[in-house]
Length: 410
Image (cartoon, rainbow, N blue to C red):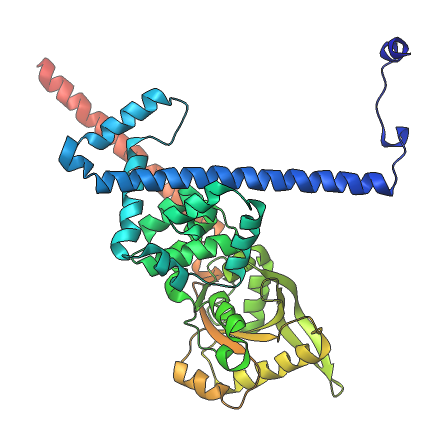
């Protein structure tokens, strides 16, 4: 029978076998176990690597290697280790310097690293993730050893992330903020660099808001991190210098992907000009989002001018409407976000008095004006002018070279 099948090749199709519920359950379990194995393997490898790097950096410091063996000892260690382990990329001299700097960064800036980590890193979601990872490796003696060596939170962050965080951060508080943010958001190294370039550590919680008064402490802290003080709308273009809210909204909606990136991780776009009817009258919300991490709706109102107290009243109305019409029992309270061209913090805080819904006010900048951009004809004219200047420069150089040649021959 086997020979006969080999003589007649065929495609194996799903309908060639009988699939039932038990098979589907079994396949799902196989996939789950494999993903779990991948997580465990990646975590173990990262743990081992970070522990080794921490200990090597510590050795270079404690042994006073440069004083004892000379200023070139780090390069010599690099050569010796690369000779023994040629396939590893962990032993470049630059990487060894990073290990030393990494150890010094945390031990010099905070005498008690573990204590600083436990006090400064966010709790709740952060520690839940650590617990989940710890459960995957429960019973391993190595984990206990690692935790005794240096802070558990570091284990979840790849070495490349640690280097970028160390290079960017001025204080241990700032570094640990980005360590925690990396774990909570699960971001790549490029995304981390983008977040740090925007100086999220210093901007978080700076937007005027009333979150502490109307949200739980945990939710309030998270919401303050989510809402930025200022948004860079440099990706959007309006037609004229004197644009209104509708034009701003249209410009942002045309680049919704860029808008979501600027707002930050967790925002899901539900639509613009969302209509609500109250008392027989139609009103429209500029932009409506749902935040996956906050588990709440976010009502966003746009103003192409500085903040005015009446803006808070209108936003409060929309937040209440969404709470009544859309919010489910499992959702957290709806949050209002007003983004305007400028604000006075005293005006905002006074406007919040008497309002019982959570809301924040932020500013935006860098919106592009189409009139300020060169037209296609202007671009062509500029290119032609540059080409003409380049040709003239070449002609002058050729003339000068010919004159020098004639002088030498003479």
